[in-house]
Length: 274
Image (cartoon, rainbow, N blue to C red):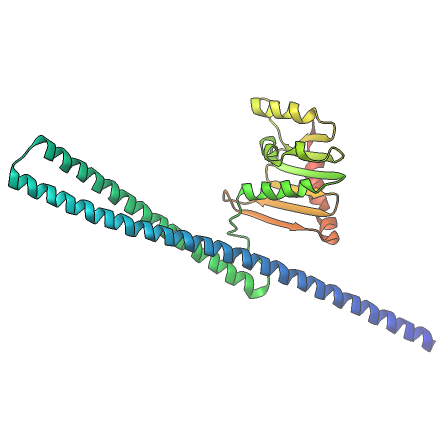
């Protein structure tokens, strides 16, 4: 009895150790995710600050140009008064006035750009602070454009060996994935919005259906970008309310992929056979 009791205690201890190890691994993953997120935000802030410096330099240049043009204008007007009015001098003065107006407009636009950049930097800094605070990444104001998502999906597709599942808002988005460059051994199940009444959609549909390794279904959701490669890597991008407000994440963790596989399959199962 005592031996059995000891065995049970050992099993309990082993289970506890495994649970703790899993928890530690999860925390490490969360820390790495936060570090990557903060690093990305640092890069974005740095880029925006560099843009801000360029804008400020442009304003300084414009201000100097404006001062020079105003001096030229004053000089021309003084010469006109001293030497008498001529058609040529009137034209020079009018041209200078127009240049001054253009410079003033450029200055106003540069001021607006700087104000916009300063707001964006402030939002990024707030988001970075919030992310570092409790380990939870806030994607409410994520600024990830469609082009970056497509680029990453294309990289994942190039590594595929056997099977790939893809979801895109419309068939037009598939053009930038370079499906033709994937290995011919890779079977691709693709779901996206398809409107045969649109000439481009009809042409693309005909092209993709001519490939033996591509199966297409019409999914009208237009709400996500998704790719699952060989059951080993997953990227999911959910469209937000803003144009570039995508909630994007990628993972190679088998448990994550197993959990999210239902979402990956949803658009395919809900898709209409063509």
